[in-house]
Structure formats: structure tokens, C-alpha cells
Length: 423
Length: 217
Image (cartoon, helix red, strand yellow):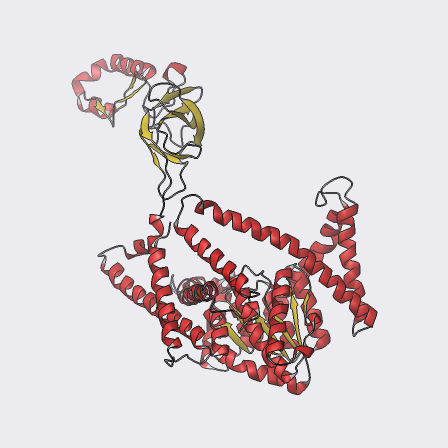
């Protein structure tokens, strides 16, 4: 007869556990032992009655101690502002889905390795990590992780000491810093070249070439131009880009004496847009043509704003509409209404989900980066054009990185994607 | 100084945001939260600017009997209808609490109106799609074909119609392929361009090269 112990012999708080398998096969192969089968059966049953198997959940509280979590490690959380220590552990062998009695873990902390431990937090079953976010930097702490099963528990040996500290640089973001430096330096370098008078080639952007035509059309028709700078506030870079383009458009409307209306959905955008339009009219020598009522507030509410503009479009029947900024679901409502009144429409946004709507409903659409390039493109100012070339250099770098990444990743030489993980 | 001070503030705040991203050490770790709080406070106060402007523009229209002036009456009435119950008739509770007059208007007037506007989108999508999917050029034809497969692939009848095709080539799988590969690739290319555009614009603003948002050249 062969008894085959499987797996490990576990010791939990001094209680030994054994599990056997293959008993039946061993008996069947040993024919001489069949005579003793009833006695052996009794003995085997007796053994299984008093020694629980590894998988069984003990009913007797004396056997209800869970195995403690192993490999408890406490260390300072890297790249943070201090005051945090992370505690990791290996799950208790009793922390299994089938074991409904297993509750979870309690984490105890002390500044001494042997006394004074108090509970500072708990983790549910299946968790193997907890952050202690209430530490004092420079103070060394010890941690115990306690596995709790029913009313019983067992504790790991103290782990540590570990002290939290704050760091001066986030090492997980070094790749972002490098990318930022490369792009920024290239932008500044191209700006310097442009300042020295070097002629820079910028590809034609159809939507921006059509700005003059769109303003001219409204002038000829004697109708209004509406400029919609999106539904977001001045903290959104798309709104800033939209307001910047508004300045260029306002200069044209001032020159052509075309009526301009700018309904906005944010108070700060209204103030900024007024300043920009006022300045444009002043610079064009038409301060008398400017009025504060050209830029007015409708509402902060997304669909209220859309409804307001729809009404204005239907009543005023503008010849030209510009949509420049950040838009959400209202984009198509606005653009379709503008289309239905026969306005020439130029849109620009960096919201990828709204681009198809604008492309479908507008005559020209500035796609993503073109919105940000518009100000430089329309002004033809060398310093601004230089920044566009720098942007193009950034694109070239990304293109090369993609090609290199495809080759390296496909060949299996190195996990190239690791270089682009930002923590 | 009218332009210099905003430019200096822009530069300081811009660089602060960049530095706090890379430096987790105090005091940089609290700067983002601090600046965001300031921004929210400014936004909260600025709402009065908008509200007062709305009233002023509407009252001007009424007093001058400008074109479409009756709409201005509706605007003012709507404004007062929601503001007065919110300020005065909350019965000692917070104005958004269930059961207040403000909540009643919000639930029974505002929400249905917003939903109506949103629902209209369905019709606009249909009319815009009808125009966009006309096969006038090679590109438009490709768009039409892609839309055809994606739309049919997203409904059960697509798989029923293509059930004679081998597994992996049915409508739903072709739709998934279009969405997962060509569509994702195109969208990512746009996203990369946008990210670079944002970096470039931000740098122009921080360095004071771009000034037109301040009313400058």
C-alpha cells in the first residue's frame, strides 16, 4: 500500500495538515491486502475523520486558523510626495475563492519590531497590497499582515523597517521629459531660424484658405457671420486656439464692414473674445464699428446653448458660420442647422469624436492639429510659423519611433512599448 | 503693462504646471490642486458676468424693440423662473434637494427640454449621413462602403445576411476589423497631431509668442 502525500505539508500556528491521494489504486494493486479491506477501510475513514484535508474547510475552531500571508514587504512608494509606504504580501494559502470563511487581511503598524502594533487598515480577500498614507517621513515603521478567517487569525512576522520620503524627480516620467525637451527645443530652434528670415514651407490648409472667401461671401450677401468658439472654458487649449482665430476673422470683418456675432457659452470666454474682437477692430482702424453686443453670453448649458444658436441661425440666416474650439454632442446639431440655412461653414476642433460630424456637415474642417496651426497660418508671422515647423519635426520623430518600434517589436528583440509607459 | 502682466502670469502658471508634473516634492505636489481651486473660484464668480450680460442684452432688445425682441422676454422669464425659486423658495433646504421648487422645474422642464435637444441628434445624424455617404468621389465611395459594413455588422441581420461566408469574414467581424484597425490607426494619427499641436500652442502661449488671445498681434 502506498500513500502519496500531495503538495506540501503545511504548518499553520502549530497545526499540521496532510492530504493523501492514490489510496484506492494502491489497494487494488496489492491483492494480498484485500482480506484486510474492512479493517483498512475503517482505519482510512478514521484517519479522514480526524485529519482534515488541505482543501476542506475545518469546522472545528481549533483547526480554523488561516495560514498567514508570506513574504511581507514594506517599502517607500517611489516617485511621490512622501507620507506613503506600500505593503505587499503573498496571499494566504487559505485565501481561495472556495473558502467563504476567509474574510481578508488586517494591516498592523508599529515603530518597534516587537510591540505596539495597531491596526491601520484592512484589505479584502484576494488583495495583496495596501498603501499606508499616514506616515511621517523619515520615521521607520514595521508592519504585520494578519490573515482573518472567521473569528480566527494568524499573523506574518514583522516586515520592515521602512520609512517614507519625498522625491525631487518622478523617474517614471523621464520619457515624457525627454519627449517634451526634444519637441520644445525643435520648436524654439525653428522659431529662431524663422526670426533670422529663413523662408519656411507650410503646406496649404484648405479650410484656412477659405476664410477670406467665407468672409467675402457674407459681405457680398450683406448677411451676418457667426463665430462659435466651442462650449468649453478658457482653460481648454482648443478654446484659446478658437479665440485666437477669432481675432483674425474679426480683423477681416472689420475691414469688410461685415456684421459679426459671437454667441458664447462661458463668461470668461465672453470677456476674452470681447477683448480680442475690440482689439482687432481697433487695429483695423474701425473702433467705431465695434460694439460689446457683438459678443454675448447665452448659457453654460450644452443643449441650451445649442438650442439658442439654432434659433439664431434660423432667424438670422447667416451667410457664414465658424465653429472653432471644443465641441461635444452639440456639434452636429449646430452644423446641420447651419447647413440647412445655407451658410458656408468652416469648423475646427480637436475632439476626434466630433470630427466626422463636422466633416459631414461643414464645407471645410480643420482636423485636430490644423486648429492649432490656424493662428500661425493666418498671421504668416515668422515666429508662429517656426513653431509649426517644430511641430512637424515632432511628427517626424514619432513616425521614426513607430517604424523602429514595428521592427523591434516584430523581431522580438526588446519590448519597445516599455519605453512609452508613463507612470 | 496691460499685456505684460497677463503674459507673466501665463508664463509662471504654465511653467508651474510643467514642473509639478515632474517634481512630486512639496510644494510642487500641491500646486496643481491649488491652481485648480483658484480657477474654479474664478469660474464661479465669472458666472455672474454671463448672467448679467444675458439680462442686459435681453433688456436692451426689449427697450429698443429690436428684431425678434419677444424672444428676449422669454429668455428673461426663463432666467427668473429658475433663479427665483432657487434663491427664495427652497424652504430652508439646499436648492437642489428633492422636493424643492428648483428641483421640480429641473426635473419637469429642464431635463425634458435637454433630452429633446439630444434626441434631435438622431435626425441630424440621418440627414448628415445621407449627404456624407453619397459616392461622388473615390474617397466618399470608400467611406460609404466602410459605413455599409460597420452599420450592417452592428445589427444581427448583418450576420444573417453573411452567414454563407466562412467564420471570420462575416459582417460583424468585418465591422470589428474596420473599427479596430483602419479606424483606430486613423484616429491615433489624429490624436498624435493634436497632442503635438497642444504642445506647440502651449509653448507659444507660455513663451509669449502667441498673444492674439490677449488682443495683441
